[in-house]
Amino acid sequence: MRRRLSLIAAAATLGLTLAGCGGAAETPSNTAAPASEATGKVGVFTWWADGSEKVGLDALVKVFNTDYPGLTFDNLAVAGGAGSQAKSVLAAQLKAGNPPDSFQAHAGAELQDYIDAEQLEDLTSFYTDNNLTDQFPKDLIDRLTVDGKIYSVPSNIHRSNVVWANVEVLKDAGLDPTKPAEDLDAWIADLEKIKASGKTPLAVAGSWTQVQLFENVLLSSLGVDGYNGLWDGATDWKGADVTKAIESYKKVLSYTNTDRDSLSDWAPATQLVQDGAAGYNLMGDWAEAKFAQDGDVAGTDYTYFPMPGTKGVFNFLADSFTLPVGAPNPAGAKAWLTTIGSAEGQAAFNKAKGSIPANTTAKTDDFSEYQKSAIKDFSQDKIVSSLAHGAAVPVAWLNDLSTAVSKFGGDNDVAALQESAATTAEKFAK
Image (cartoon, rainbow, N blue to C red):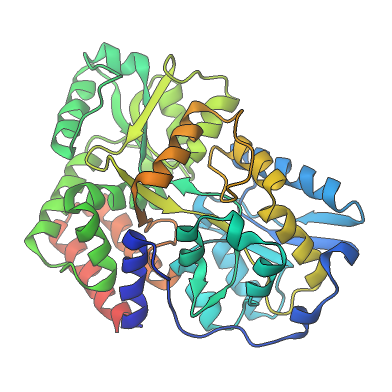
């Protein structure tokens, strides 16, 4: 396990192979009929049940229906941003031996638990058959590879370290929307100015959105190497630099909306910025889809920039789809995965979702200016893996740390959060 986690951090910075242990056994699914001959129903499990995420899924399903008119898409979505509810439901179904034909997961360390449990089919030959290794960026292929095998097909590339801001709220607070703060201390000073203007400085929602804020404060405070070191043991969770980072998180959290824990998902927090009730929202770029679909105009109504202190860093995650062992319709699942990986499917999906295509041959001429900037940044920035979205650590580690971060939201005990995070890291690094 320690070897695996060390490689996770290396891949986050250098694009090296994300290595792990275990793998799926050969099953009849590997010799299923080709996707072109698939018929029947394809049950696909996601957490894209509402809002802009559902719009993105609908766009993808439209392409799938065109590609495979003989198949019926069965939407098995369970609501909950970042899969907070869906993952528990999925785990129960897999344990009961009742897998869907394909399920959504986050690329990276999150898949490791499924791989270790031998619940995923090896899709390496699928990549070869569909020429995906030539169409996806090498860094992404490396991140998807575990002990020489690939177990999922990414539908997109998301960025989690984006701050979205209401232009008028910033102006009313005496801030220039075109000149964001360059570091965390300067951003805290800007948060104070918005507070003085009578608006909520920073909008967040429930548990996972707070974990996402926490990870980006850590990234801003510790830098790329320090942040990556949290996941492989190179950075001491008990160190003074981490103490300082958690104290900064405590300060940032003090500027958030008091009803944050009552907001069950990310969209209501983003809406506070859209409504002019809050100045900033630290959110992944699925927020771009919400702004666009609600008719907001970039530069006029809202603006965006990397989390202060993280310019030149792309905090990466990707929604990815799998072929579970024992899938009822493996040929249908491969048809779905074929659409997922295709240039046409990725163009339709990502334009609606706010993310960028994993497939570099997808046409992006009509994408938003934000998306075009993200495509450029992914090609040149340093890339790290998101904690909150399963790219940095396995699910069990994330769950324990999420519990500690949620508790901190109530007691603000820096020492307790630091000790809990250190204990969790020691447990999973063994």
